[in-house]
Image (cartoon, rainbow, N blue to C red; front, side, top):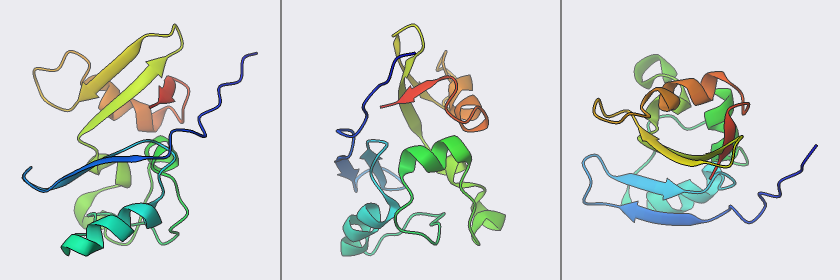
Amino acid sequence: MHLVDINALEHVLQLDLDHSPPCITVEPKVTIGEILQITLQHNLVLPVVPEFEDFSIGGLVAGEGIQISSHKYGVFSATILEIEMVLGDGTVVRASGHPDDPNRALVAEVPERLGTLGLLT
């Protein structure tokens, strides 16, 4: 068995206000609370905001993340535009839901696999 320390993956990388809708790029250990501290400064909020601010984005993606607004926007993972992950063989893969993306199936499969496909980066 090999252990991988992901504790350093705790950064907000970008808030893109020019994207429509605005989007935020974060590493998996960033919490909902940390995202809200940034987005609320711009009068923005995520479509699905779980009640506990200590939930990490990686955990919400892997575990689906549901909240009261999920009836309108779906589970938390349905709001993800793109993921990057390291697969079990060490391959780094990026995937989006875009129809032309050959890895687009990963965006839908990652939440349903509870972390068994690889590590979100």
